[in-house]
Length: 304
Image (cartoon, rainbow, N blue to C red; front, side, top):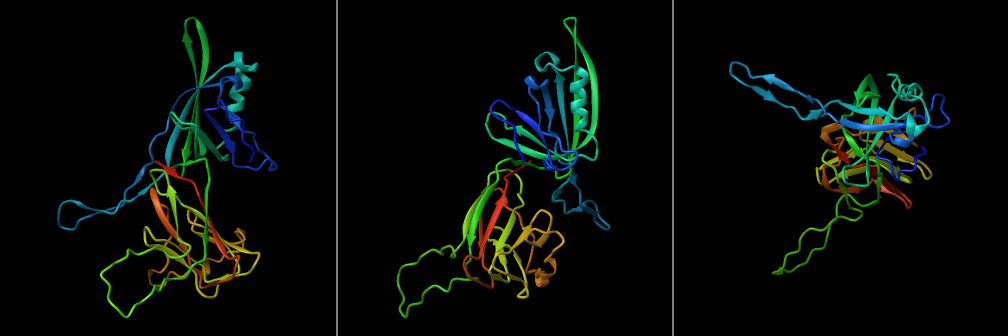
């Protein structure tokens, strides 16, 4: 996906379609030289997905609420035909091309006081057009509203980390004498600390490259892991893609080639995990592996 020159850009829309797909739209840049002057944005807040049960025979409720839902985002844009060389009608039509309810887009916004972009996945909700009169001159303002199903902003910058294969546990060393010194526990081979710099859990994608059998990948910080059974074999030149947001496991990223049936959920061995805000210790310890067997984890920091 091609991105615009971001030197003086504060926000823009990017199509989720590829440039070769029918109906693809090039990025829509909200900047005066393009005819669009952002006036303000309401980022909303994700709805709280209440999960409560009334207490029997007494006051109060049992409250198990822990998840968020969708949020609404509204952007007010003034049309500027003078700076773009286009008519107001042409500019408004450009905006409305993006607002059909079947379209899915990424809205990119530069963070306040910074140079980094954050983005949110949106689908159109409503368009409102109004005419304002100031000092005997009229100009048109458009309010664009979207529904963000995931409810979370994320960093535009993708972070990646390579996890070398390690063993399930380190046996350490024993002595036949007692010493008056103690040593703190150390990280196991291949363990890496990664960071979610945001304020909400971030869901990574892990790609495990063969030769590997029985892949296992863990977030030691939250003590949650994904474990596959011994029947899962990843050959050299292949990879298993684990999408923690979607809850999928596919061979070579092909949605028609699922390996979900090999996930070991028996006895609570496997749980879908996320990267909590701050530091997270990750490790990859398959049943067997041969170089170059490795796990690559990618994620974006997530924000409320």
